[in-house]
Image 1: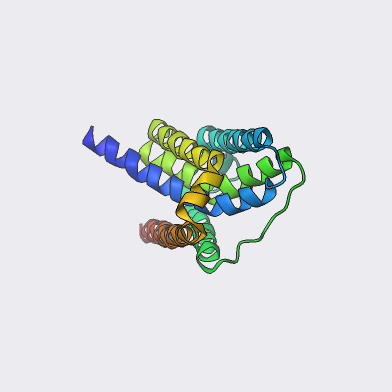
Image 2: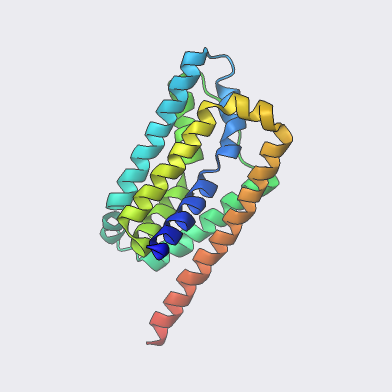
Length: 199
């Protein structure tokens, strides 16, 4: 039981870091600044729904998609590691592209993907499913998504309470964590491929 809880905790922290709601808060506030409070709430709900549907699709069918395209888990680990490395660098150095939206549905889609469920989350979901199982990954993903939704729902209060500087600093920490995880994925994929070649 302790081992399962540890895997669940590690998976949750990892997925939450990749979703990086601290980085999404400024974008969410920017694209919803002219909206009514009810529209902001709808936007947060819709964003979480879009992100959740994508997670479920790749959680349950990701392996089949890889097999259909003849892509091994090791190949995907290396590619995913590179994506996480780039994403982490973008967050850390502030080079993520800014996006605008006109309607709350458009804003929600932008927040839902690629900001919440982007290549990093998709990659990690597929890999975690293979490494720790569907149930742990599903529970970790849903908890991470719920926490992210809460932060978007109350993004205005969070930013006002913590201040822009704290949100920015915490986002940078998340970026460093993503870079470390990306390197870990790349190393694991390469070492496995080298081991397969040596046999």
